[in-house]
Image (cartoon, each protein chain N blue to C red):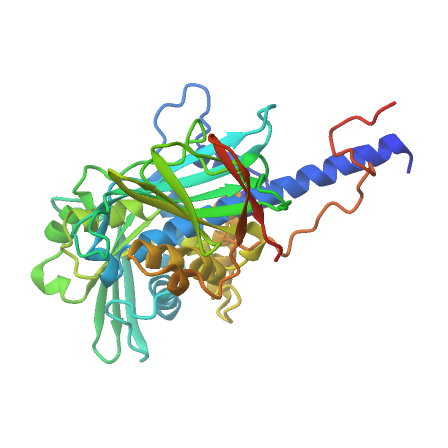
Amino acid sequence: MNRNESIGVSIGESLRFVSSVAAECEALLKTVKDEVSRMLLQADMIKVYSAAGDWILSYEEDETGWISMEVAASLALQIKSKRLKDKNKASGHAFIQISLAGCGTDALNNREPLIYVGWWHEPITFGEIQMGFPIDVSTDYQLKLEEGALFRWTHKAAPDEWCYVLRLTDVNTLQDAIKLIVTPLKRLLLGDSINDALDSLPIVRFLPAEGDSDSQQFTAMPR
Amino acid sequence: MFQAFIRRKSRLYKRYLGYREPGERRVSEEDEITALIMGPLEYLPPEAQVLIWRTILEWHQPDPPLPFPNTSVKDAQIRFWPRTTIEPDLLVELEWMCGTRRIILVEFKWNAPLSGQYQLHRQWKEYLSKEQKKNAIHLFIGPETSPAINAISESNIWKGRLVARSWSNIASSLRKIKLNPNRGLSVWSTQVISFLKLLNLNSFQGFDHLQPPSNPAIKGNNVFFRSAPK
């Protein structure tokens, strides 16, 4: 096979591969949306939260517009009562962000696509609001990495926001999606501790790396 | 029609992805999808019909509302768009030899929102009598389940009897019966799965089965699409 032919074959195979990855990402998003919606009907959740709208989908394309590098789904939740352990919690958005490439995968020592699962006030829109590295910091919000596993943002006058991170290729079945995404999301929404919600799960753990007054970088620990 | 779509003899299914013929204005996507997918059930024996509804309702749900008995099936009837003051998409009536009866009131959604904020509430309240409700389940099937979840959040009048399934859930659940010895049932479920896949509603299969490109053309730091330095 000469070089041009080899490039041609590579282009064809690579595009088919990307297309297959995209189909699985879409199917995973649908699965998570369905399972989170079902989770909201469970007795302990229905007492506290209710859906406050439809899922908001957002895509981030590469510079050419040919390929989606990142995709996210966010669902607004209304808190119905103050029976949470943290009484200051207000309504916000549960979200999942899949980052195949781009700043969502730019933690030091990471070369893999990542999934972010979290609770933020605003939905992920990729214009200004998305999870990525290095993480922007400001004097208004205090960023903490808890147990090397959960990023938490606190503000004097506002309730907290948080997210944890998975490697995309660790999620391969419906059961994985429930065990690694839906159940921990539920437990954290209900105020369980990080250890109770995330311990023993193959989530990505981080160490703080260099940072300045505008941003903080983190190093992903190996599997 | 499934055969023509799946063998790519017809591209008419593209209308369900939003494509329109020149001059075509209104397409009754929901009604066409309802008839296309559920129509063949009328030709299946009652036992097969019951197995389909059982599979959909019990999929991934350890405690389904009003579980079906495991005795012999006596009868299964379906009525499309039965109308009173309100018109659900499908009414399914199932009866077993032991005397148990179940009614499934089905609302299908495709690319449109619910017809008003209280469409599901009205169906449950107005279509079924008090007596019918004792044995009834309300089933919502749509691109995603949030309209049903929002309806419950708005006012939970169903007490666990509103079951929400997405079309992807349907594709996943039918995988359980596509190898069933009943030929009609296995053909129908296989065709529905393939049809939903054409409409990008395939079930999640994971990433570990994907075949990475086997022929990396360029070695070193160059990546696909970037021309090599001369």
